[in-house]
Image 1 (tube, rainbow, N blue to C red):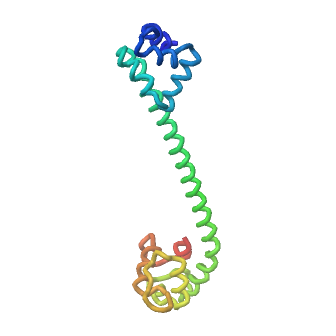
Image 2: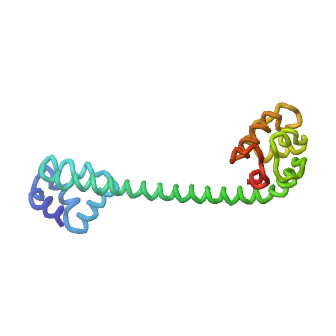
Length: 186
């Protein structure tokens, strides 16, 4: 209503912009439709520029409309896109956690078997020396369970002694110099 009053009151009979006023601000529904163009910024400069040039005070009508409507809409669309991306990222992270848990439950029996095989004295604790002297088959298995550990250059694909020491230190989270079954399997 404000736009209809401000634009048509002084500019309807103006010979320079009368055609624009008649085309875009003839009545309330057409005025609303014209102002809808501000939402999408659809050829609005051809509408407001001649009007503001003829009546500069209309800048106080059109400038806030341009800034508030188009910028707010752009921010709203951006917020929806970002929110959707965050939700998808969280769902992906949750799916990855479930998959990793599933993989861990699949390898847990093999890890426990390998732990018992390396525990030469049977005390339920692996010392660094026991870990370093693991059979080749277990070192190969450890290489598949711990792909981030340094790989040896030999043809068997087993972890070498330096990689075993590095892996031992990573697993020994309490820095006790010994690894129990829980530390090894976690």
